[in-house]
Amino acid sequence: MKHYLLSIQQPDGGPPPPEVIEPIMRNVAAFNEELRASGAWVFAGGLHEASGAAVARPRKDDVLVTDGPYAEGKEHVGGLSIIRAEDFESALEWGRKLARATTLPVEVREFQGVMDDHVGCAPD
Image 1: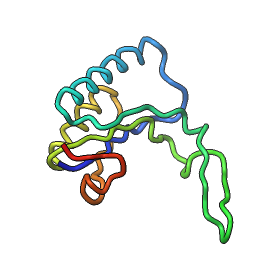
Image 2 (image 1 turned 90 degrees about the vertical axis):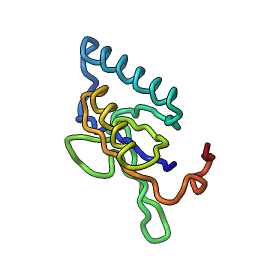
Image 3 (image 1 turned 45 degrees about the vertical axis):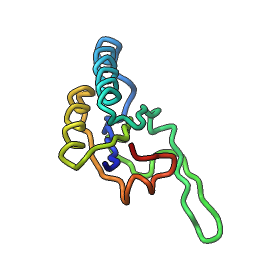
Image 4 (image 1 turned 180 degrees about the vertical axis):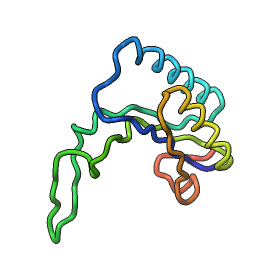
């Protein structure tokens, strides 16, 4: 098994109106339940808007902290899931399911190393 990051790419701006977001949140809850039932779930969560972010940058012997996301863009990471999967294709299938649930693009990336290398995570 390997760990993968599924990151949801959310457009900038506030949340959609209740009639749009409520069915999406039900779909995401069902997705998370399916992940848990399969044993693939490690961690998942949504993030506050990127406008509330800060960036810490090393500058010589100091660290400069600035408001906002690292890069300006029209979308940002809005949430993430960390999963266990046998291989990239299996992780990609979970990414497809999450994209359908959220109606947003989902990036699928493998963590470096093996699961034993990841702090706080133990293999099955």
